[in-house]
Length: 277
Image (cartoon, rainbow, N blue to C red; front, side):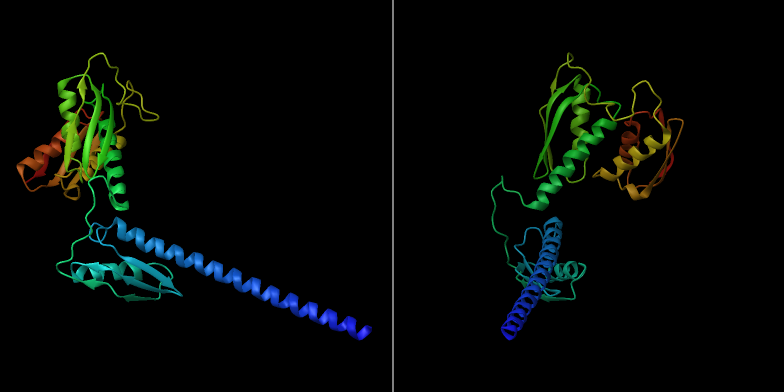
């Protein structure tokens, strides 16, 4: 009886030990699977955001720190880029780059309504940028509008208080990096109240706009512009007077930089004597 009891205890102990070991192994396997799924997602998302890789149907799989890449690209440089991106992800120890290079490769045709992940992100960024530029402008008060972007094509709808405000909104949208075209459907309606400008938290129409705020917005406007090289221009503001220094490529770029700076709320004048061609 005593012997049988001991055997039963031993059997139960072995069963429990096996179950515990199995559970630990399962937990470890699950954790590893989650890590690998995250790595695959990180690589794929970066491919989707890259303008050089997003059109290609690339596949990624990760197993025990090794990333395997498959698919087809047009040029060798794109294959190398895909490998660099994968190898830069934390936890990836090696990359098996099986991507094929075919000069005559043509991405799968998509309908005009079908956007990939990267294009959706680009369109959302453009929409946010256009809205921000209109908020910062002292000349677009009275705009009650919506901004919609699809495949780089911006559509403006709503109301403006004047033809000048409507035209300015269109030109500001067109000068935004990434914008391919602008469909300006704004309707001039002087009865509409100023609904877009001066709505940022902590900003009061009657209050003096700080020099720091002006400098930041001028720099941001240059950065978002498709026709002004922001890294070539330094901006400083003193009591609402903006000073631009640096060098630009043409008279048209210089004139646009001055116009963009002068358009920001709170700017009293723009000194561009030190902005040369």
